[in-house]
Length: 403
Image (cartoon, rainbow, N blue to C red; front, side, top):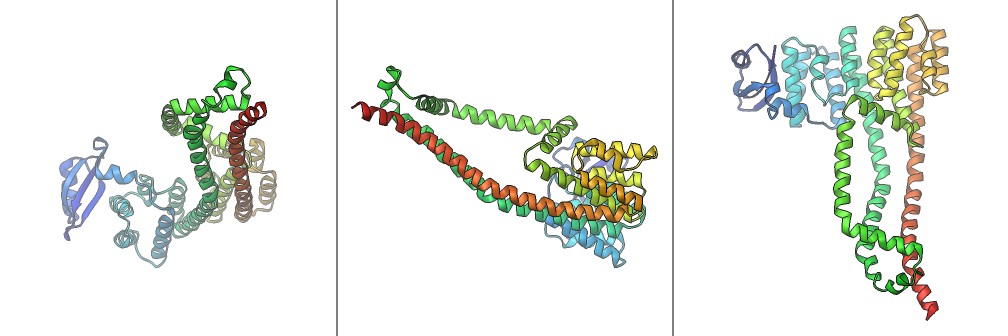
């Protein structure tokens, strides 16, 4: 059945936006009326790019708010509240309009017979890991536990992101201020020395560093705007390219090869994979199904491909550790622990322990990288300023010695 995006009013006059499945537009209006809703606008979703359903599906919602939502839903379900009633309670009490719209659509789809995981998969507000965990929880009968795990994982990731952004605030401030100051020097201050150095340039005695500085200053003054426009265009081209599957694979492969931070990205992806896989195995989900879900949770296409190859080997009767070691993207210590755990039949417990250890190691490496970044930024800024000053002082000293 096609999907119809709608805007309607309830009995209290509140605006409600959502998507409903129906054979025709008339059937959609009838279904809305049966829910005590008064339709204001109904249109086929794929033909209405500006419809409410399309708009709220593209909205991003704060991760901390999503973690709280997962936790609240898990608590209500564990208390015996039915799923539909739990979704209704959460959507009614949230003050975030974007989340309320998303939950309204999820509620409507679950009411129409969709599973919670399928309804969540239609919205970017829910990560692939969350959708996969909820689907597995719904199929395996541990939905409350799956939602709790997703809540804890989401909150941990958001805390790590917040700490990282906070630690990077000062280096970013240095970079922005330094770029503005140096740019102002090159555009407004350096050109005033060009006439002063004209005689030395005609005689061919102008130092090379000064010649390069004047050339760069003139180029920046004449073509700086075009340079900025080119950077903006390159950014949007790059952004559109990495939206494709090939572009995401290239980006993830490049991220793993970065110095210092490449290991951080690798550890984060491996930790996500191990935590989700351990949780699923601990709840009785089969190894192949668990690998399929956990490869999506890794968040890195290179590792996801390696995990997919491992799943194929396992279906052929091999162990998990061997293909993971052969791909070269898993730390040797992690592979060794997985191999021992397979032999001792404690893979689920060991995987969660591995994830905890990787999270702690990643935090230490991230703190070290940020601490190193501050003096590096200061050194770069000092070197650039020294280059500008030396480029202006050398010819002045040369002229004074000649006099």
